[in-house]
Image (cartoon, rainbow, N blue to C red):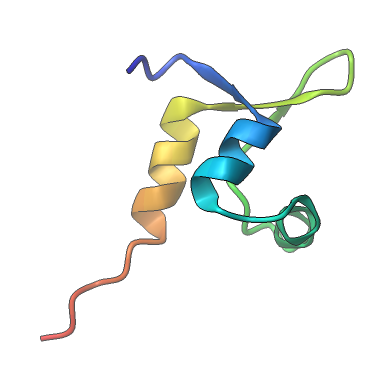
Length: 63
């Protein structure tokens, strides 16, 4: 999968299993994956940005 792929909001919401409302609350707190707002107002997320967000939020194994 290309790291340059741009995901639509609904694709990201499906992958992270989150409602749109919960996502926008998380985004307002600065905790959501990084998105780019297109000139037409739509949001896109780079695959690489979503993958980086996943890595930041992985749980560390308890020793």
